[in-house]
Each structure stands twice: as structure tokens, then as C-alpha cells.
Amino acid sequence: MDIADKVPNETDRLEEQLLKNLRTTVERVLPIPHYQESYREIGITQAEDIKSIKDFQRLPLTTKEDLRKNYPFGLFAEPMENIVRLHASSGTTGKPTVVGYTRQDINLWAKIVANELERAGVTKKDVVQIAYGYGLFTGGMGLHYGCEELGAIVVPISGGNTARQLMLMRDFGTTVLACTPSYALYLAESLEESGISRDELKLKIGIFGAEPWTEGMREEIEARLGIKAFDIYGLSEIMGPGVALECPAHRGLHIDEHFYPEILDEEGNPLPNGERGELVITSIEKEGFPVLRYRTKDLTTLHYGPCSCGHFGWTMERVSARVDDMLIIRGVNVFPSQVEEAILLEGFEPHYLLVVYRVGNLDQLEVQVEVNETTFFDEVRELEGRQDKLKKRIEDVLGISVRIRLVEPKSIPRSEGKAIRVIDKRNKEG
Ligand code: DLL
Image 1 (cartoon, rainbow, N blue to C red):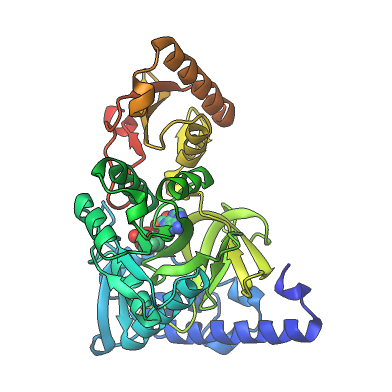
Image 2 (cartoon, helix red, strand yellow):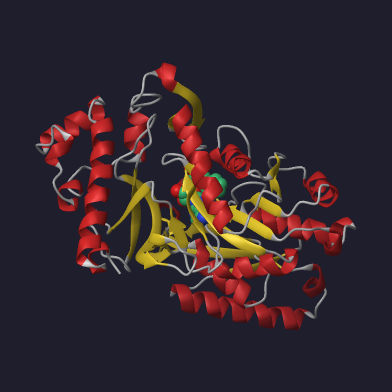
């Protein structure tokens, strides 16, 4: 369904409202030289020049590069005296991207996250253990303010110190765990070795995001922790966690109405709902750091319409990958999530690493996969059989030959934040 598929009067009203909201963001960014210059080039000097969604879609896209060029505060729309918080991306190369929030932005963010958590079933009676990192990363603080707004009890433990996490989870009666899916899996694994039994815990809900994860990974975490897992999406440039979150129907992540999403193809042309491409987001009502048509580099598909939970609007499918994560191996596009799915389908642990290297001029992909303690002592022949099956499944999915290396239990580094899934040695060797 699209906005245009609703009853005509309702359609006009929704489109008019959306346009009004988008014009407000345009108005807010127009005094910023970066936006002003690029908009003037296409004849837009005032918000009223945007007369339709089509006009809006002519506006230039904003990229991470634009944020870097305007480092640190060049794209802020409010004087610094009105900014009350800064966050920054954890980028490993170059300058970080910096975002600023006014007090109203912080309140809005808290409300958005609180609404979404409520829809996922979190209540003020819940004890929420926030094991996302606190600091410049938006994960910890974003969830923190949202939970407080909801009235839930917050345990601001941040990431790491796994034994302590488990002890407090038991002693405080934690009911909701918020962290990356890879850390949730690590906690589940550590729980099994900790001497604390699952029956001693009161966990029931997981709010997991900040990195791509598969449906198979969800099933694994849900089974091992005995919880319902919800996918939460967000990025610091737009606000932080809470741009979208699943509801109990688990039919995609509902995008909050303060964000206007679009999907673009590789050339930057808009794609209709239902088609997969790069997600582009415009913030609505943000003051300190409004962003217009920001290229997220995340690949997903949009749908528009009602959900059984009462939400009406845009829903995005899980982000399976980032454009940046795509490896091109011998001309073939490879995403780590395709390998993760195959690994789980063959009954291996979702602890894996893709190592890409070059022999002569030929790219090679080695998939390192952990075996667990039980299978480690299986007959060599049995293990070889499973390894061959996994190899065949991955090769069928990717369409290129791969090398599988089964590695010892616990030998792939565990992550307390975003997991590292790929080591690309080609450039260093090349
Ligand atoms: O990761 C914000 C966040 C914190 C989201 C906690 C959810 C929970 P950044 O560090 O700026 O912000 O990274 C943003 O992470 O563009 C995606 O590539 C990826 N990402 C975030 N959530 C998901 C998700 C936070 N649910 C980048 N699924 C985004 C897949 C995700 N990828």
C-alpha cells in the first residue's frame, strides 16, 4: 500500500501533512551554508518552493562525507548555546561524524523510544539492563532516556564485564535486556557456563540492534535465553536507536513518524515500496541537527500501511546489510548475512569470520566457523561430512567457491558491541 492507496480525502490530508513537515525541515536547514548553496543550484531558495513530494525528491542527498566536510558543528541548525548534548560516530577512519541535540531533541528522542518500547511490550514494571555502550555511541544513552521516560527501572551497566552482567541480571530480576545481538549471544553462552541457571532469571524481552543479524540468529538467541527478541534500528546521524522498532507481530520494523524514509537504487533514483535498495531518511521536528535525505548506506525494503498492532505508516524490513559491507569477490557480491544464514541452517554456531585474501590475482574467501564443545569431539569423518555440507550450501548461495575452516570452540573473538565479521586482507597484500 502507498499513501495514494488510502481513501482520496485521507490521502490528500496525509500527503499535505507530510509535505508540511518536510517543508519545516527544509526551512530549518536553509540558513546552513552547505544546504543553502546546493539548493540554490537547483532553484530552491525557500521552503515554499517545495510544492510536492516530487519536488522534495529533487533535493540533493546528504552523505557521511558532507558531515565530515562540515566537522564538527557545521551542519548544526541551532546556536551552540541551545545544544545540550553531543554524540559522535565510532568511525574507525578519518574524523568522526558529530551530532548535536537541543533539550527538546533529547525529550523527543526519549518519547519516541518510550513509545516504541511500549509497543514491544515493555512496561514501567520492567527492569531494563542496558548493555549497549554508554558514551559518544548513542546506544546506551538513547535506550536509557527512553526507558526512564516510560518509567521502567534502568540498570545502566553499559557493555562488557560479562560475569557481572549475569550476576546482576539474576540479582536485580532483569526482565528486559538491551544490547547488540552478538553480545546477547555471548551472554547466553556465558550463562550456560556460569552456574546460574536460566530458571533463576526473569528475562522475557530482548531489544537488539546496532548491527545486522538474521532470522536464524534471532531463533538461536530466543531459544538460548528463553525470551522474545525485538529488532531495533537507528543511526547516530538521524538520532540514535529508535528510528524503527519491531512490534510483537514481528512483520518488520515500524518507522516512527518523525522520520521520512525513501528507498533509492544504486544511481540514487527513488524505488517504489516493496523494492530493496538504500534507505534514505529525513528527520522531522529535529532542531539541533536536522538532516535532509541522509544516505544511510543500509539496504532494506519499505512497506506502507496498517499493522495489527495499531501502527499505520512505514515499516522497513530488517537491514540485512550495509552497502559498505558488501564484499566483491571475483566479481560476485557477497554479504556476511548470507553466510550467517547458511551456517545456522547447517546447525553450526553463529560465531564466524569471513577472511578474504588474494592468491596471485585471484580472490579467495575463507569462512572460519566454530564448532561447539560437543561436536568438537565427534568423529573426524562426521565433522568432515558436515563441513562439506556447509561448503556446498554456502557455495550454492554465493555462487563462488569458498574454503571452510572449522575452528575450535571459543576461538573467534566475542564482541561486547558491534561484531566484526570480515577481515579483508586484499588491500594490504595487493
Ligand atoms: O548503532 C544506533 C543504535 C544503537 C541502533 C542501539 C540500535 C541499537 P551508529 O553507531 O551510528 O548507531 O550505527 C548505525 O548501525 O547505519 C546500520 O548500518 C547499523 N544498524 C543499526 N541498527 C541496526 C539493525 C547505532 N537493527 C548503523 N539492524 C546503521 C542492522 C543496524 N543494522
